[in-house]
Image 1 (cartoon, protein in one colour):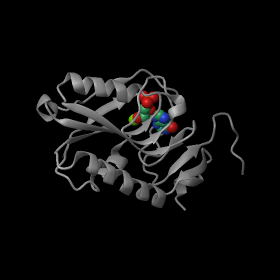
Image 2 (cartoon, rainbow, N blue to C red; image 1 turned 180 degrees about the vertical axis):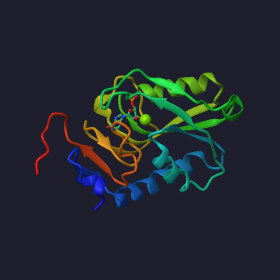
Image 3 (tube, helix red, strand yellow; image 1 turned 45 degrees about the vertical axis):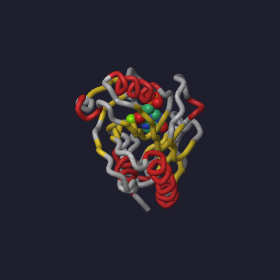
Length: 186
Ligand code: IMP
Ligand code: MG
């Protein structure tokens, strides 16, 4: 048992390592199928997607390139703050390229739709999106991911790159956080 998982903030495990791996096998095959034989650039959104992106790209047997963007939307725990974008790929890395934007979770949709627009403005030939988790019930901006591993209900999750106040990114599973205000039993 991972000692992070016995923390009273953690309610339950939603996705185990083997489920995650099986699903990423499937999705990476779909991505390879969609792009083959063309080259493309994978753009992971830091920090949350670093675990997912590294598992994903190692399963795609195509000549892809990597370039990172940085975005932050959750400043104080669980509620979305103002979106902050930074550290974009250079024009040379993006211009005329097919781009696959990779994020940990599609929630309100604001992060991915802003990043997609921004990359197109900077000259990307086309931009597709791939997310590890999708919470469609939370959407505020109209956007559907081109590739998605798991759809989940409206619960706040941590692990596999996702954080709460900067913690839990290193959990190898996805776990639900106890709803705020709930006393931890036991
Ligand atoms: P969006 O712009 O609302 O779609 O937010 C996407 C970003 O919010 C993700 O990249 C995450 O960093 C963060 N986020 C949304 N839901 C969760 C969650 O359940 N746990 C941790 N981070 C989350
Ligand atoms: Mg994020």
